[in-house]
Image (cartoon, rainbow, N blue to C red; front, top):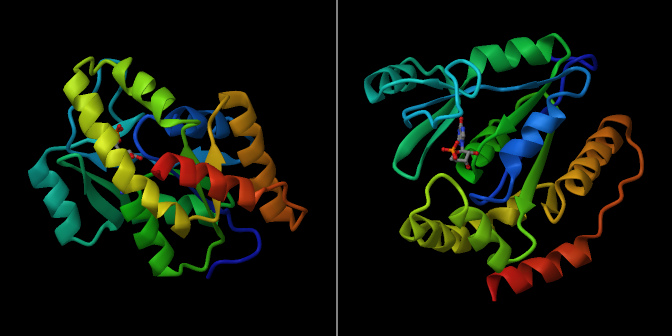
Length: 210
Ligand code: 5GP
């Protein structure tokens, strides 16, 4: 039975290229914070390792997890499957650890709809502008401009999901963005006052979607 001493679930989602994975890694260094490591059918990138960044599995194994109902949530993103197994998350929360999820909007919706008895705080990270996002996407290992363009189209669809998150944060500088998230988590956990300008965010989203 979940209690006051339980950890908190913290979801970070963003359109591709907004810098969320870096933020999750920074937050995981805080005392008592741990990342939920996902399973994926995607191929590892050159700088990724098994059991650390992801559990890399084939589609057959992934489908076995689905069949055995081991996922708290799962989704198909850019033609690969991604999912969060339930048991490690619940174990961490029950030990009082705050669990960080780097998952997309589909997974965030699923976790939210589960109405678990653990506190949930969700963040949607956005780039400062469409131009900067395109630059960031083009500078990744996927140098292929076509992929960057495809992800820009995906961005226009993904950004619409901001409405389902508790907070939208603009990643214009990684350090500032990190501090904002850290302070909001702290305020949420301790019922403190929150430094959050919803009007500014709405204006920014209007610019990104126009
Ligand atoms: P990438 O392939 O770049 O690591 O991740 C692609 C997208 O999948 C990102 O938006 C990432 O947040 C999302 N993702 C990673 N793990 C999971 C997961 O377990 N569940 C869901 N729903 N999305 C995930």
